[in-house]
Image (tube, rainbow, N blue to C red):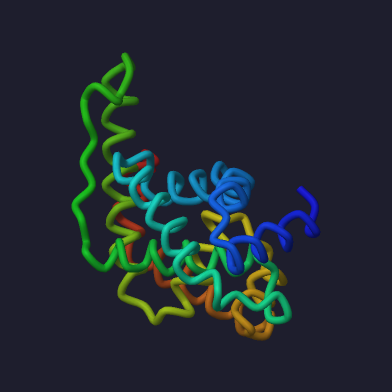
Length: 186
C-alpha cells in the first residue's frame, strides 16, 4: 500500500464519509491488527470483537488524526494498544476450550495449560503498571515494534523506552520465576 492511497482514503472518509475508502483502509491493516490482538489474547474468542472495536474507534476518531505527528500505522497501533489495555483492566478470565487443544500427549497439554495460565498472569501483572510502560511492553512484545519505532510512536526518548521495557522484564522475571521454571520444566 502506498502512503498516497492511505492519505486519499483518510481524506475521503473525513470529507465524504466514504464507506468504500473506509473499507479499503481497514482491509489494508486488518490482518496486522488482528495478529497483534491475537498474540496478546493467545487466540481468545474475544480477538475478533476487540479487533472490530479498534477499527470502530479508529473510524470514530479519524478526524483527530494528524499526519504531522505520526504515521497512520503508528496512530492506529496507539488506538489498538489502548483498547488492549482497557480490555486487560477488565481482567476477563482467560479460558481454554478443550476443543481448541488438538490431540496432543498429556505433557504437551499440561505445558500448554501452564503456559496459557502464566501468560494470563503476566498480562494481569503488566496491566497494573503505568500506561506508558504497558504501551512499550505491548508494542515491543506483541507488535514487534523496535525501540526506535516505539520511541517515535509514544514521543519518548529511546533510552526511556528501553528503560521501561527492561525494568518491566526484570520485574516479570522476579515475580514469576518459580512459575516460569515449572512451566519450562526447570
